[in-house]
Image (cartoon, rainbow, N blue to C red; front, side, top):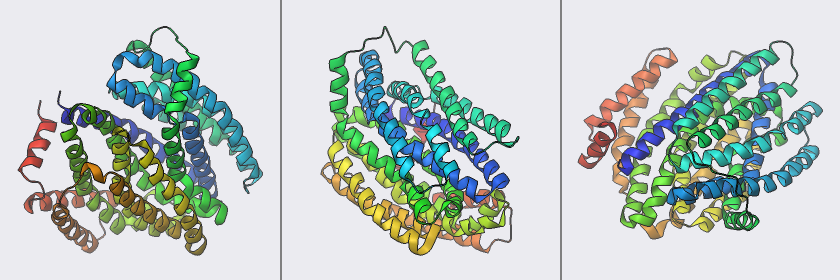
Length: 474
């Protein structure tokens, strides 16, 4: 099977997995938001932000290293699993202690702190999940991640309804997350055993030390990347408060759906691009450039459509009047998707090309400069200021990442985006002047209009059409 079709297949599987997780997660958030309001949604977003950051810190960059190395040598899977489990287990113990201390000094209400302390128990469960999932990604058996994400998300929703419908406290929010993650870990562990990726346990202290040493750059990148992903929520919650965080998170949940799909695409590209760097260097830069081009063609109309339909989307999802302010946040956040996609794509390319150090420094600069920017803009303009700050951070990061990858000549003519931009503008104008259609119908009309305009204006050349045909051919 060609690399193009492998990437397409894996993108589909990862997109299904992440899409199911995000959609069921959105249902869970809507249940919490419409039943308990912006403060509870703020608490839940703080919980997820803490777990996302500390789970990544606990992983010490090992999953991405394991995926890259096992993708290059399938026979090493058993050693990488057991040594990776040992190495990540060591880092997890220290990170659990760090999370307890950090929560203690945060200016949150007591119930929020207690919720976060209980959630610390999710970290060792994540260790098992992340190492096993790294093997599945390396072997490109993404379909098992679909099963894990589906069962995990369904379990979280069931536990949430069961606990919160009968007067559960905010502690239930931590239980919900622990239960879902535990089931996901069980599924991926069973999958790697059934697929015979594992043999007898083979812990090796030297191997554990070597993994920790080799993953140092990955850890720095992963740590800063985790902060980058959710420092908007943490900063906003400290500077403005939990209610403002809930308003921001209501809009972010919509954008998050598409951010997760972007991550699915870049994660699917990563093993293939890692092999291309070793086996076919001349195709390495071309594959990255084409993926960015196609991504921008898709994301331009998406951002425009979300901006035009933002008030309708928010009113459709959230029934409480307090959420009306989320529409302005969504209109801004939708444009963060474009630089986010470029930045995350180029960062993955740098890692695949053994340039973890430049990737680390790009992300580090984004976090250090971005933290100050987010704090100032959140303080001055609240949730909308946070959205503008996040957009500017990713814009700066995409420029830095492009310069870091400059030696590979990852280029495509800017003119290739002129026609998509024109089609996007025409589509957005049509949506703006349409009568009050239901939001789902307006979205469908917008997608159809953009598709027709794109092909009418010749957005895709012959090479593009040939690649697209290869993705759907048997």
